Length: 404
Image 1: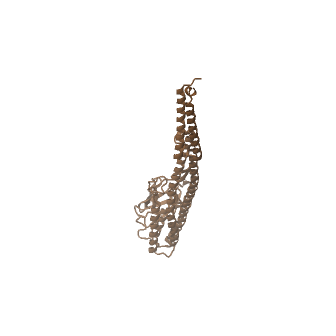
Image 2: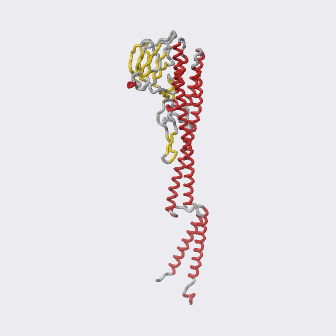
């Protein structure tokens, strides 16, 4: 086979250039500490690095989510710690309210204290997180959870907790439904509570309701609105519909609404008869703490002129005592849920840290320079390059002229 002199020189130059490129690449991996300087160096390893890097990024985002969730849960638990303290104080105060030796001034003082405690609880129920989102409105984070109403306060949020992804296919509730914390005070499944509007001009009182026809019970709330001292209308406040109008009123006579019976009785003072515009409310045993305290405060403000009045007050105090205990139970249950969430976050943080180390180790193994191996490769490439130079130099000196 005939080989031209130019081909010999061209092949030699190409070989020298290749060796120089290899030496330069290995030198660069040693100086930079990165052996995957471009995807073409090792496409398979580069693809694996990309996959591991993306997984590490997702894992890091889960860590950020857990940090945010921990902040939200810790803030809510701190607020509920204050709520717990207030409710524990209420339990001792409601016992004092049942003291039969209290005079009118004492009862008014206690009523003011209960109203003050209700205002403190309302302030805590409407707390926000560091971003200005309400803690107890469910997913309606921009809606004030509770606003004052004629019978205490009403819940405005929704019934859905906000969840955040804290791990692969793992979500955690980071907001609470306010009605589960401050409401849902279920004293009895068939109990109905009655209370007078604080703005009534008369001292007439309403009894608690009793179920007389269970199939007819709707579990709705109602308002009895007097249109004169002897007539009243009934409105379903849950559906905002009128149940009946122009009903005849007689003090102490049974009033039945959708299977629930109760009575309204004239007060003992000069303005004891219900007046035009007076309202009385009836609602199921599922109350909130603000309604409980409002009802109790109203009961304490009523005059005690007869043994029956004292009995009504004692019943109101006993009812409040039971309701406050139930409310405290709801709060403690909510705090237990928060504690479980914080423990879960702590456990997931540990798993996330281990996964992050695993991802970083994998990425390092794929793209970081193995210095002993790289130095050995560099020495080999330099040796081969120098040997090729010597062989080429020696071969290039052979010619017919030299042989002659």
